[in-house]
Amino acid sequence: MNNAHPSKRFLANQIIFQDYIDRIDDFLTYEKKITDEYTKKELEEEYYPSREEDLYFFYDFDDYYQLFLYSFTISLYQFFDDSIIRYLKYEHKKHLTNLSLSDIQGRGPKKYRVYLEKVLEQNPDFWPKSGWNDFYIFNSLRNCIVHNNGYIDEQLQHIHKKRLEQHIPKNDDIDISENNRILLKKDYSNYLLDLVFNFLEALFRHAGYDY
Image 1 (spheres, rainbow, N blue to C red):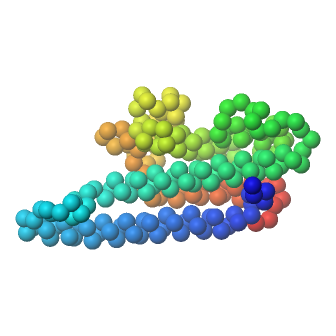
Image 2: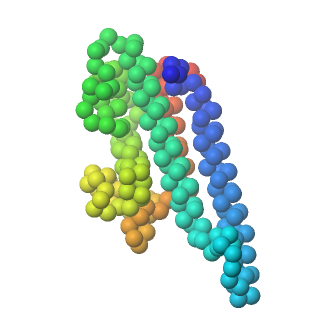
Image 3: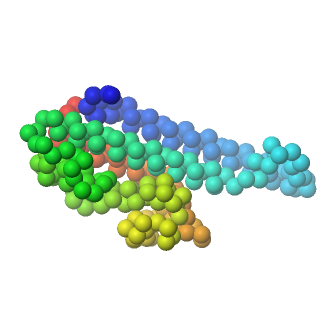
């Protein structure tokens, strides 16, 4: 297991995530442009593809794009989750306490916040209290995508459904489709990217770590 402090390669990971979303966005945007032009031309000629491999020209590229943004959201959340868990475990070794992270009730950001402030006794001022709510929403978004395929319906756990229904109308870069499925924009993914790395930077600086 890698025992290095999570602040190592912090900047490299930030660049990787930003480069990833920009490159895939450029690729899908270009493909959509080419496909739209090709499809228009073929339809004007009353052409319909006879080969199965030609049918992709008639697929909705918005579906591809949402799949990409869903995948990005899950990967970014996993990175955040792994980074803060490794940080808490690393810091735990420096404190004289028998309480481990697994001893704290709950899960996700709320659990991490309790352990950080109550067990490790680290000053919470490095991050505004209201800012933690952004991570609770991020957690709900991740769970909605992973466990309910992005649909906000009765199958989604009530707390996540309530959070998302309250959050989405306040933000222009995330929406709900006619069939109650979350629709993301790249700007929202960039917002999540900034949220995660601004938080980790503040946390590492607060703890006195270089990266």
